Image 1 (tube, rainbow, N blue to C red):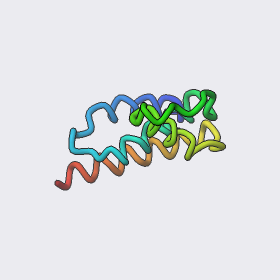
Image 2: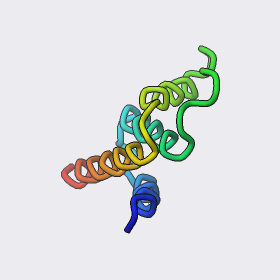
Image 3: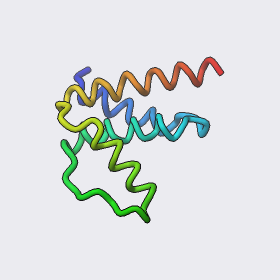
Image 4: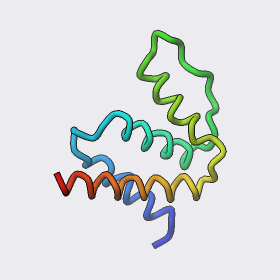
Length: 89
């Protein structure tokens, strides 16, 4: 299985993470996903009144510069970690 296929598989698995997954971890996944699928941030930062969108933008900006492959690999690793944590609860 190639990296792209494994990434897509784990993107599906991420949708089944428990509701108890922290917002911090969800934002990390979001940033890595956007970096892997879009690349570097390509939009202006949302205004102060849009806290949710701003947090998502900040998470994406935090991983700016990672290659597509590196972002995919980090995403897969993070989903695996969260799955293990959920299984041990």
